[in-house]
Structures are given as structure tokens and as C-alpha cells.
Image (tube, rainbow, N blue to C red):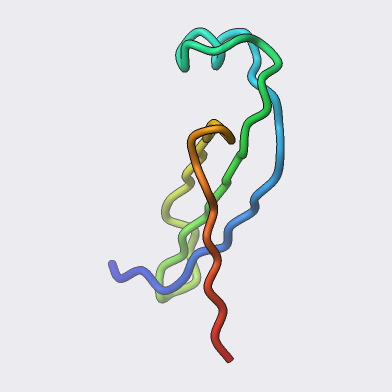
Length: 66
């Protein structure tokens, strides 16, 4: 299987109780949430990725070309 492309959604959320415990932060701390669906060359969704990032420790860089 070969991967062709991915669709990503980025939004803001807050840490729920379980996420706060796992990340050693307070409940309600702002987080960046990145959801990604990766598709094969045949157009089939093959992977789903969910990432939660502390906004005080991460910077999102987007480079665009045309």
C-alpha cells in the first residue's frame, strides 16, 4: 500500500480530566488538537492520527507554496 495524501484539521480545545492527568497539567488548560486522516493512492482512508499539543510548548509552522 502506498500513501497518497492526508487531510488535517487543527483547532483549539481544552484538557479533559484524563488528558490533564496524562500530560501532567491542570484540567481545562488550552491545547492544540490536530486530527489527520491519511489516504492510500486508491483513495481509501488507511490511518487516523489524533495529536494533542500543549500550546505553551509547541509552535505550529505552516509553509505554503504556489
